[in-house]
Amino acid sequence: MKSLLKLIRLELRKNKINLLRAVLITDLVILLFMILIAFTGIDDAGEFITYADVFEGVHIFVKVTFLIFGSVLISKLVIDEYKNNTVTVLFMYPIPRKKLMAAKLIIVSLFILITVFVSNVLISAALVGFNHYFMDTITGEVTLKLITSQITMAASDAVYSAGIGLIPLFFGLRKKSVPATIVSAVLIASILSSGFGNFRMGNQVGVSLFLGLVGVAVAYLSIRNIEHQDIA
Image 1: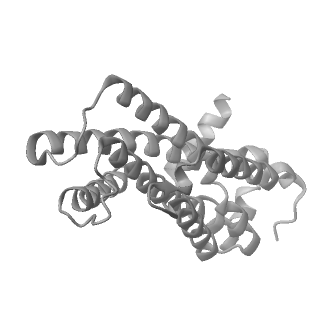
Image 2 (image 1 turned 180 degrees about the horizontal axis):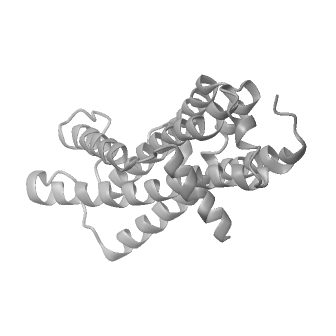
């Protein structure tokens, strides 16, 4: 475990990964977008009337946004290594290939898990504050029961998303292509955000659980035989 944590730290240092600023900007954009559609009358369909409706919208926007964000991270950490053939140098290190790849995939999954959960909580809290102090447009009250259910949903969303975010790895490795990785993430995000009325695919536990398990399977199959794979 210590060696794996050391590999994760080295990987972050090697790629100069500092995502905090990008995540904060992304959260701000999502927040402004939610304010625009929930408080300015653009939402003609009236889908954001109660706090539950607003929180559900936040969950969807956060999930699909950071799934695409995660595909960019996969491209940088994994696909670029194969595309530029630097993976041959990487695998010359006296470290098992599985550990090297596992460290990269753990970074991606942890990034998605943490950002989805924290962003859900922060953006939802900001919208509650905005409604309370400025607009008073959203009906209903923020009860302890609602808070508890939303935090639980945010946590489960984060766990599912950490798995779903690994699915683009399959398409990226198959083509050794960054565009294929990102486009596949966009298609998955489109599926999760699709729906009608108050129904959204991304809010269905069964769909999220299934896709999350598919992502875990993709990660496992990608590194299962990597010690014996010809990477030329």
